[in-house]
Structure formats: C-alpha cells, structure tokens
Image (cartoon, rainbow, N blue to C red; front, side, top):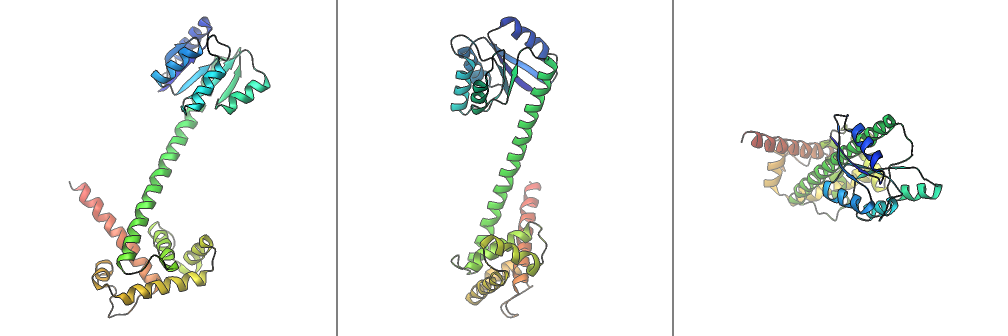
Length: 261
C-alpha cells in the first residue's frame, strides 16, 4: 500500500485528487494539508511514502517545505504539481530532491501511473540495497573466518601471500572456477596490481611459513587425513581448496544445528 499525502491550498482540488486516488486499492491518501506548515506536520506525523506538493501556498511555500525535507534527510518521494513553474523553480525543485515536476491542469490517470512508477522504483532500489548490505555482511564474516584460520596456522598478516590466500579462498568459496593459473592468480594480480607469477610465489611462500611453524592440531582440524606434516606440504591449489571446503562444512554444521533446534 502506497501512503500518499496531498499538500495544496486549493481545497476543491485536494478533494478531487483524494477521491480519485482513493479508488486505487494499492494507494491510501493518509492526509491532506493546505499550507507548508501543516504539510511538514503531516510528513513528520504520518510519514507518507509520497507527497503531491503545490508550490504557491500561504505561510510556507512548496520550495520551503521541499528544502526542509531535503535538509532533514526525509526519504518521502515528492511530485511537484503546480500552475506556475519557471525554469529556475524547476531546477531548484530537482536540486532539493523532487522526483517529478508537473504542470496543472493534469490528466489524473497520468498522475496515478507516475505514482506507481516512482514507488516501484523506490521499492526496487530498497531491495537492491538490502541485498547488497546482506552480501557485504556475508563477505565480511567470511573474510574474518578465513583470517582466523590463516593466523591459527601460523601465517602472519604481514606477508603478501596472506592477503592473496584470503582472496583466493573467498573466490573458491563463492563458487569461482578453480583454475588457478587461468582465473584465480590473474584475478588477484589485477586487483593488487602485480603479476600472476608473483601471486603464485607469494602464496607458496606464505604456505611454507605456516607449514614450517607446524601447528599440527590446527592442520588436523582443517585438513583431517587429507594432508599432514608427514605427507609433506600441499600445493597452493590443494591448500586453498581444502580450506574453502572446510568453511563450507562449517557453514553446513551451523545451519544444521540451527534448523534442528
């Protein structure tokens, strides 16, 4: 349901507009104001998704109201609907965040279509933003888990290979093709402005440092019987893929324990 506020000093026009918009099941006119001061109270108290705003009104005009909305970071969408509109006024209204500027008289069906379009865009952007935040949070959590594992294996964070390893493990964990020479190393090299061969050598050196420190308990915890100090150091690819697989298993255990409660 789209919550709409109407702010216009023409009482007869606001009644016509309210009656028209009320015929739509997905629109609800939650308030009407006839000057800028009442309009600001409507916005603050009712929190409409969208307002239809006239510019020329007593006490406080539409541009002043729009400026208040802009300065207070209120996310309400605004359609300017007025009989007077110079180029300067239109430019200023857009600078203050108005979504559309329409001249009276207007075909009401065009207004309803515009409201639907504006609010659909707003919902889509909100969904995209929420997904982006969710993905960012997941990436940050994964990065922390990888960092904990690498440090517990004795790989210090001051090595370039530490950061390259973390990137590679994240890529594999997120479903990237496990072709190291053709995909993984070139991608990391591009991000860190180096060469694939240097990425490969830095990762190999980081693994050697951690392996030689010999945290056997942690190696057994992550790798199990797949590799061990007695069998020798794993290749770069084995090391990265096995840690990624360990993280997937840990995630599966967390989900399983949650759903079983």
